[in-house]
Image (tube, rainbow, N blue to C red; front, side):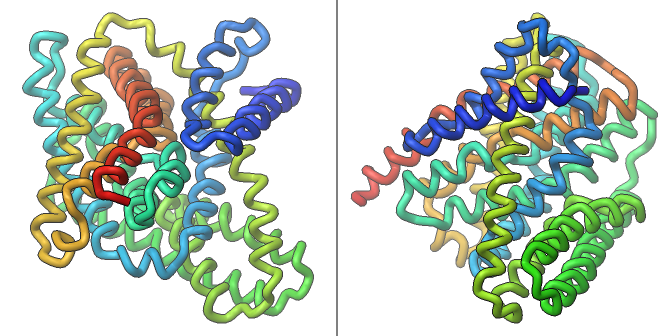
Length: 400
C-alpha cells in the first residue's frame, strides 16, 4: 500500500510528465511513467509501495472506464457499433483461442506449458488499453475512425476478457472442466446483467441530474454513477466493467438528448479531466514499481515470442473479421487494419488480471506470471514508441 507522502510525490511526478506531454506530439506519457516507476522501485523510500488487484479494480478502474465511456461521442459509438462489438466479443475469443494454441505449440523448447496454461496467458493478453495511443492517433491521423474503433473496442473487451480469464484460471488452478454450454450461459448472464444494471443506473442518475440545479451536486451524482454501477453489478455477480461502461454511455447519450443545461458538461469535464490524469499517473507509476518484482527471470526470449505472437494473432483475427463483411471491407483497408492491430496495447486490465491471478487464485506458477508481465511490458514499450511513426508513415503514403 501507500502512505500520503508517497501518493503526493507520485502525483507530482505525474504532473511533470503530463506537462511535458502537452508540449510534445508523440510523447507517450504512460510509457514514461511506467519506466519512471521502474526506476523508483530501486529507491528505498518506495520499497513499501505495492499495487494490488483491489487498488486497480476498486479504486482506479471504475473511474477510468466511466471517463472513457462518458467522453466517447455517442454518435461515434453508434457509427462503429457493429465492428467494435464483434471485435471485442467474437474477435477477442478467437484471439485467445488462437494465441493460446500458438503458445502451447511453441513453448516446448522453453518450458513445459500446458494447453490450459497457454490459454490463461492468452486471456490475460487479449484486453487492450488505448490510453497510450488514442491521443497520438488523433494527432497523427486525419481519419478519426481508427482511434474511435480502438477506443470503442477497448471499452467493451475488458468485460469479455474477465469472463475468459475466470474460466481459464479456474481450469488451470482448480482443475475445472470446460463446458461450452456453461461458458455461453455464464458469458451471456454476466454480460447482459452488467449492461442492464448499468443502463438502469444511468437512467435513474440522469433523471436525478435533470432535476438537480446545483452543478456541484450533479458532479457528485456522476461519481455515484461511476462507482455505484460498478459495485452493485459486482455485488450481483455480473460484469462491473460492462455496467460502468454502459452507465457512462447512457449519461453521454442523455446529455446530448435531454439535458439542456449548457454548462453541465463543462463542469463535469472540469472535474473528470483532473481525475483522469491523476489516476493514470498513479496507476502507470505503480505498475512500473510492481513490475520489477516479476522480471528477474530467464525466459525473456519466450516473452518476446509471446509478444510477437499476440500481434500476429490480433492482425489475423482483425483481417479475417473485417474482410468477412463487405461493408467493413470497403471502410477499412490494410493500412487501417495494421494501425488498429498495432494500437492494441496491453496495459492496465492485463496487469489487473495478473494481480488477480496471484491474489485470488494463489501465486500459481510464478514463471507464468513473469512471462505475461514481460509480454505486457514489451507491448507497452514497443507499441507506444512506434505508433506515431507508423501512423505518420501511413498518412504520408496515403498522400495526405
